[in-house]
Length: 472
Image 1 (cartoon, rainbow, N blue to C red):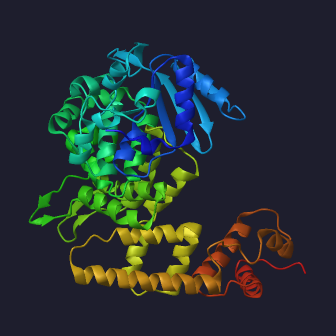
Image 2: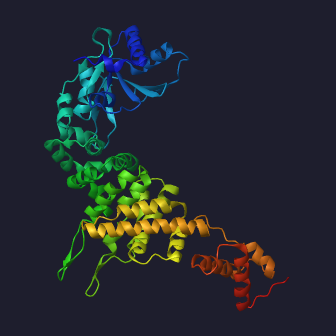
Image 3: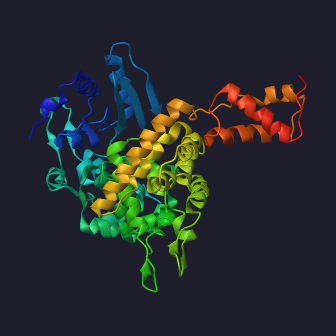
């Protein structure tokens, strides 16, 4: 079948001309072809394979493009890349690969198009469109990837044990594609992932996290995380999460399965945000529950302090997986540590002081926190579900009301420490901190408005009790 109509962009004609002048065959291969056949919005990166030198082809293509875009050459990998309009185009020579057991870096030698398709991860990524003049647009599909696309199946071109052992990251990629495309992994391939799961340990944290991020950003991440759990990969990558899959019963008392609850929360949050770090917050919001779980005869199962401990665990996970330790990690920590606050509020009478404290502590992230907590409601009881969400609506209305009146989201004390020092002729000391904290608490509790004169009068009264006298 010919797919020439999908190759109308002028870059494909330019590549075809360049290949003809060099007397090499070339093809567009991989994700671009897959997404065209799926009628899915395709990414702006295009992979070109040349039966010859990919670097020479890239340089020739640049010559034929006005303004001659810069070609980045990666000699060690035999690849080159250039940017044309809004597309990143990568060129590689067709190659054979072989692997050492302790590395995912292949030993490479020149090969045919067939050799190059053999080394691809999945049949749906091994399809190619010809860019050669005599059969421009023809589909080259040696493993019948088209049928796998129609049947929504992910399988490897060759023996899956070899494919996954050679490059264990492909196990994560299989699961990621299943999550993104809502495909099934072919049964033998899935069993091969389970057999080879320990091989994931040779993959860097950065590479693993890149795949986890893509799973989290899919429309239903639970598909991917359930597959990671089923194959045993999740036990290796995020044991803190699988530790939640342990329901105990004591004296007839059980607790909910916090692992499956977590996956529900992640799925719930997806329609409301595409923020990767808020989705990470949903994934990790209950990780402190496994180590804090205790049974009490009167109370039943408790998880006291799980939010605080969970926040500390977030940092360890980010360190272990080589994730960013900057404001992104601190955001996830904050969300995990505060994850129960709005839920507690929604169960009780919503007081202004409680809302002020929530807004003060959450700051600019209060909206994200509310989104997380609404996703956290997974009860199957329709009356309880409606009650919680009605109460959350009240909390949100209170947040707007309190914020407009008291301006605590970006809280700045109406009276500064420097002014307090000047009033009482004090040097930096414990007393200054005590007075500033007292002003903050008085505002949050609603004892005084967030205004200068009220804060000044409050400081004068409190200072008098402390034995401090103004000098003017």
